Image 1 (tube, rainbow over the protein chains, first blue to last red):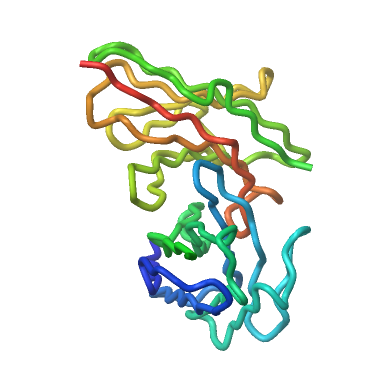
Image 2 (image 1 turned 180 degrees about the horizontal axis):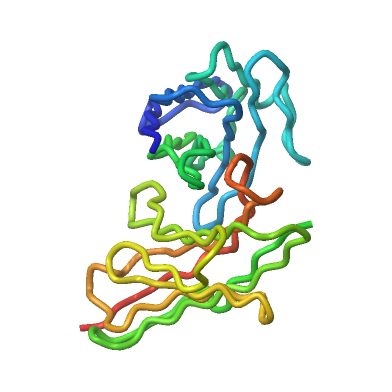
Length: 113
Length: 115
């Protein structure tokens, strides 16, 4: 199995500021995934983060708004830039490949005021 | 492209009654299917998964699901609902098959349990 730790777990942010979310996995993984869950909605994939290469973004998400780092095989960060109230969401990181299972972190709950 | 449809955004059952949450999928590759539960103000917890082999899979908290390829369905059931089952349930399919990649989620079904 995999244990995923995310920081911060919750935060209230001022509009116009940026926040970086950290995701730490207790095992080495090739791919890590970042999702967004807007209030009352399902999960939407933001991007795939591979170690040693640029992240791959899904339609509707751009690097300038959601820059991602992947410095090693156990860690990734997602930055939400120039935040607006529409960015208020839960952001989750995810990894797979462990016993045919895909694991999620507990999520980072962001409120933008 | 893979997709997931969850029928019923909100299901309400009485305590002790059967729980049935419906999920249909579309996949161009052999699907890996998952059910996750999200309790209020919490993250996602894996309930159960289907990868290969036995089509009836059992998960945590008394839930089970049956993979029916002919019906492209993966419905979640529990014989007797408990108050603690009240939560949101998400069905998901692996986009590229296997468990290495990302998931495509349904819109979720909120389960309410009446005393």
